[in-house]
Amino acid sequence: MEIKTIFSRDGYTIVEWIEDGLRRRGKLPFQTNKTITEDMLSLILPYGMVWGDVVYPFILPPEIVSEEIDKNFYNNGIFTQSDLQKANPNQVY
Image 1 (cartoon, helix red, strand yellow):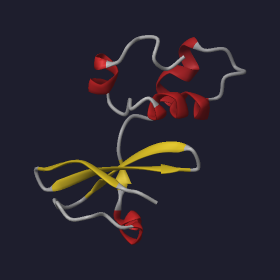
Image 2 (tube, helix red, strand yellow; image 1 turned 45 degrees about the vertical axis):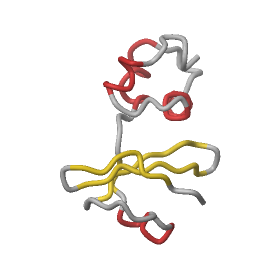
Image 3 (cartoon, rainbow, N blue to C red; image 1 turned 90 degrees about the vertical axis):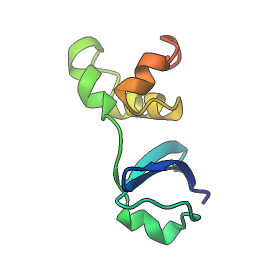
């Protein structure tokens, strides 16, 4: 599994990897420029919004499950509100 560093600053490192067809990001609780290995995944803290919990209960029909929303957002590189503001509005459909 390839794990790439998105950025490293202020005492933490944001990393990204693909797991079961889903792009994931996590936060390592230390700053590093070294290669991140799979055995380090156990140290990773969740990173990003849980989009399904944010938009699902309010604006989407019940046949769309929150996991699908998360998958669409994450696979399009939208993990934070800042990512969403930069994204094309049609990107996650």
